[in-house]
Image (cartoon, rainbow, N blue to C red):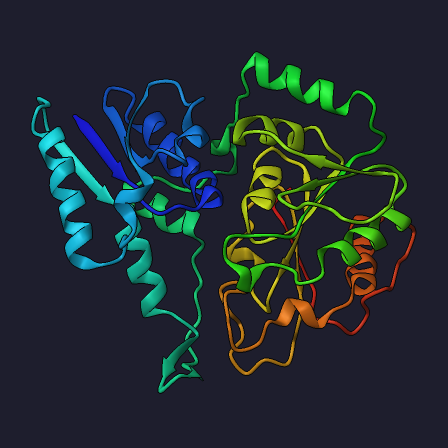
Length: 328
């Protein structure tokens, strides 16, 4: 038996969220060959999964990833590879199934250039969707991230001279979900945090002495994050890297339900804006209201402190719409 899983979008965080489906399937079907088709740029996310065969596509082939004709061409190319294999073959088109679910349940649509609320609500996380597609229950234990010795040695070197490190990740390729004032945010947290700050994916231009840049490949950055105190970040690679390794994770989202995004042992999602008629949104991917930028860094510090308890502030966000969700 051969189980083929196709996940062709660019998101590194999505790759991390896919791990429970892959590992769950490998545990349930130990006799089967498991083959993952993914982008070359996301393949490091799965490199530590023993027994998983990976076939990669060059990123340039997905310039029109969600164009039907282009998608079908990629699937046909995959079939040519698959047809060389012997045995019963099951193919799971994960990107397509996930997109269909999210489109059918989108809380808003765009009509004549305007965002219109639908009243619908996405209730399943992508982790849930993918696990259901491949026929396994979601288990938080199936992130099961294992770092290689070279990655752990790198992390130890980076952290050897740092005290109580907090990671901040505020930039994304998708600018709609990025925080617009990263230096101001980092400066404020650097003043308040009792320790050092590691900044991911941003060229910090401030003057705080306890701020350091984390520049490494995906796997090494992930290993560093796994050994840090906590991470504060937008919906991108950082929060999934921290959440999947048990690090306290504070997500800066729009008015969403963290049960549908942060299925990790310790996870909190902040509502940057709680008066949007289009809520609950899936995440802050909305050109209509860049809601996470309506809050100042001080608001996020108070919210983080309230949930993490690191600064002793107990009621910084009373009356706001923050939600705690924890599987621990």
